[in-house]
Length: 187
Image (cartoon, rainbow, N blue to C red; front, side):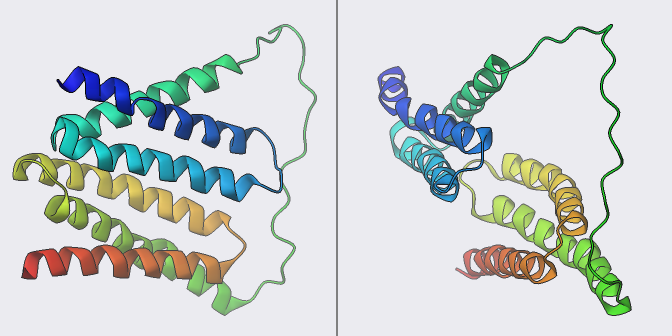
């Protein structure tokens, strides 16, 4: 019965990956809606697969299908270039034109270090405590994803010019994930 449900749910991750690829291709006014719609379709596919395919097999099948489609869409846009042709030299990217202020550097360091680490730890704990499946699997996945999320949070925080946006996202992720883990652990 499960292969039939996999086929029935297949259009959701396919459409989600296609919407994300369209948003990635070029900047247009509807880009935020394409991103939101793509991630929403992927989330619906994963959520719908749990009762239909099982807590272990369903999310795996939907995420594998979505990532395979995304890889195929990206591979379809690959350009072959002549290796003998010299590329035009580009200048190094310009640093931010914003005036240097000491407190901004300290705040950026706090956001990239401890706050990004707390957000990553919260995501790992939320997966280890709240996700469906065997406890050993959840702990391994939560533990393995934490350093990658921390590195991603650091890179994003240091490259983004908007400090308040970085603070809001990292603080929101920290509160949401640690709150979910605490509530699930308390119940």
